[in-house]
Image (cartoon, rainbow, N blue to C red; front, side):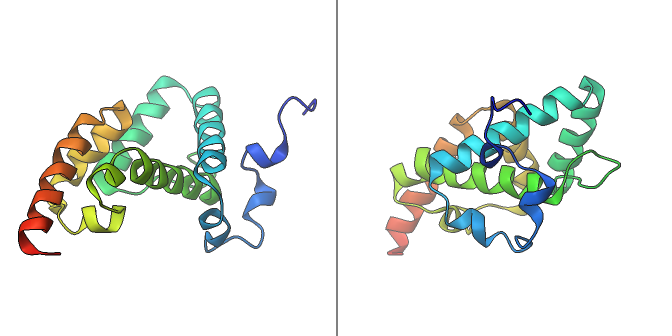
Length: 145
């Protein structure tokens, strides 16, 4: 591209080489990871019709997996970036306020409720996460964990 955006800010096929396990994402600070996430989501919105976006969002809500591959126009790396960016941002912006990590929070999530949380995440409704995290923190305190 014409130098308007550095290649490190936007996932590409190059990013997938040697990064199949996602370790590289773990080493990124939250702001860098969020920038990569935003770039991946921007690219997704620009390259997919509204109907395609809805189909993929619904598939994610139902399964918890972002559909990847040529048929969906989403690379494995882009999916990993979005997932990691979401988790790290949620840890920083929501869970840490209650003394939780994503892992701690997940210990208290019923699998049947996951689609509700995924839908809220897609809509940007963080209140659902705050309410649940607050309940989790209280429970953990009562249990001494």
